[in-house]
Length: 201
Image (tube, rainbow, N blue to C red; front, side, top):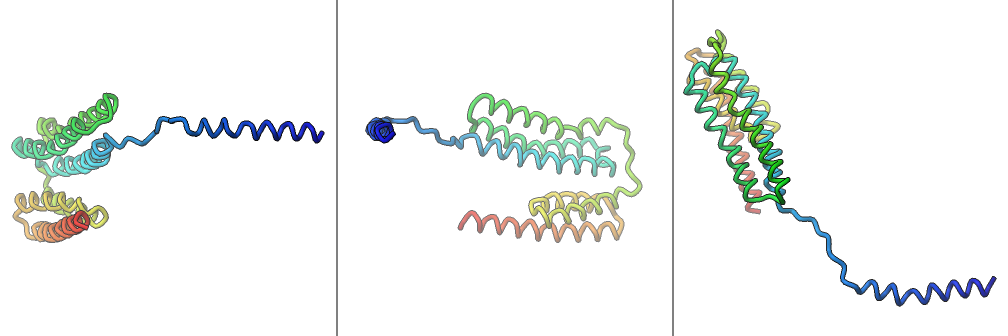
């Protein structure tokens, strides 16, 4: 039995030089390729989040009767199209391959289709809501509340408040819009300041 044990030990010792030799052979390195990550991140989070918020704005403006004006609908669409255009530029500039590029472009097309909805809503015979001024002012305040959780939403608060101020002569809705406007500018300015400090550090 001792002879069998010594024979097995001898075989293991004899295999050590072979293992050392194999360890010196060049092995192809497998590394994570981060290319395409920026575009995908912006398309999924940036464009996706913007599309969701924009859908809420579309509902708000529709029920307030803002889309009766084709000019308003066109301006909303043209301003919102800036985000998918940025996403498309990033997808072209930064992608891993055709499959990654096709996925990003598909998401961009869906987002663009949803952004174009006001042009269709303009075709509907929607009369102005009797409480349109209240709808806009409360919408601005709701967006302001969300801005305390997600600071960039303060930009949408500012937009809705400006539209509300331009569309109501009534005192209380106007005061609510002013409140949302001042608070929105403050929050958005503070967020921009914090972002600049973060990038400079």
